[in-house]
Image (cartoon, rainbow, N blue to C red):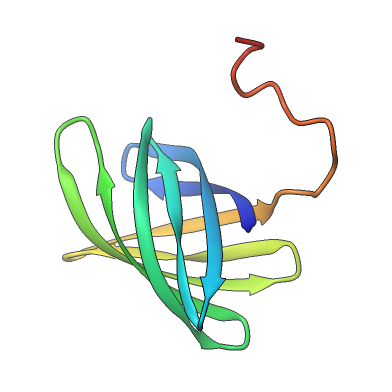
Length: 108
């Protein structure tokens, strides 16, 4: 499974999240964790370094149908999210495979 720390440059400011992807038989599945919600994604590779993902994005006030297109170059990921007429930018980095975990849960 690939994990990326991602940031969505939304109209209300940057929003940090995590993109997790797994590939099985040419299909990409996974989640985008953002704004306290885990959103399922389904997609495919569109070229050697590009992927297209369909997903919903839950917010406190709505649920948006979205398509995100990402370019992956080494450990860097960039892209756009489109929902209707709204377009927002993604950027981030692949999580390293270091052992030891992190303090995401504050030790709880």
